[in-house]
Image (cartoon, rainbow, N blue to C red):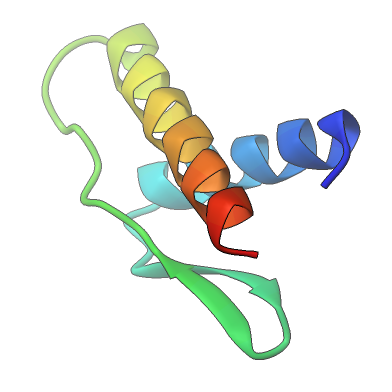
Length: 65
């Protein structure tokens, strides 16, 4: 996965986490289970949490493919 793809997917995953979605579809039959979003704190804290989790999920996904 290229750097631009990582950035794209981490932003999309962070958005999905903040929307309380259960999983993110990477490919048609491949999906990543998402953690529950942070609901307390400022919007900046919530976004930072979501982005951090998204980046760790991307790194974990890259390690398994």
